[in-house]
Image 1: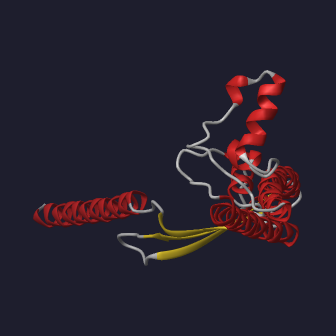
Image 2: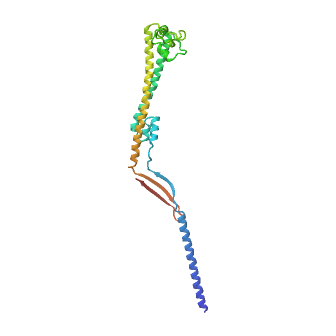
Image 3: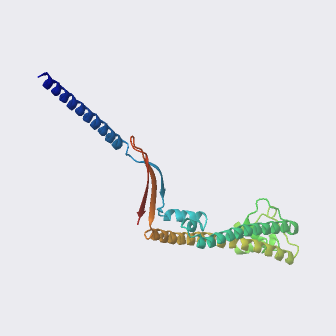
Length: 246
C-alpha cells in the first residue's frame, strides 16, 4: 500500500512539473511572438524618389517676363531660350546706347545755341528748342505768329531771346536737334522690341512646358526606400523597396 502511494506521488509530481514546464515554454513563446509583433514596424532611413514633377506654365511665363530665355531654362530646353536671352542683352545695350547718344546730342545743340544764338536755358521747354531751329531770330518768329493770329504763342523778347548769326549756324543747330530727337523716337521701337521678345519667349516657354509635361506620361518613375525592422528577440533586418511608377 505504501509502495502504491509512493508511486502515485511520484507520478503526480512528474506530471505537475511537466505542466509547469509546458506553461513556462508557452509563456516565453507568447512573449517572444508579442515582442516580434510589436517591433516589426518599419523605420524608414531615407527615400530616393526618381519621379519627375510637372512644370508650371505660370512660372514659365513669369521667368520669361523677368528675363527672356529663363522660361525655356525652367522647361529644361534652354537650347532655344538662349537666343531670347542674347536678344534681350543686345536690345538693352541698344536702349542704353541710344539714350546716351540722344542726351549727348541734346547737350551739344543747347551749348551750340548758347554760344551762337545767345539763348539762356532758364525756363526753356522742348518746344522752345524746336522753334529756334526754324527761325533766324525771335522777331521773325513773333511776326509769323502775329500774322497767323496766334498771339498767345508769341515769346517775350527778353526772356526767350535768340538770334542766329547766319543761316548755316541755324541749320547746324537744326541738324543736331533732329539727330537727338530722332534717336529718342527710335528708342520707343527698342522698348517695343524688348516687350515683344518677352512675349514670344513666354509663348515658347509655355509650349516647351506642355511638351515636358506630356513626356512625363511616357516616362517610368521610380522610388527606392531603405528601411530597418528592429526585432526584440531576432536580428535587426534591413529592407530595400523599389517601386516603379508608370
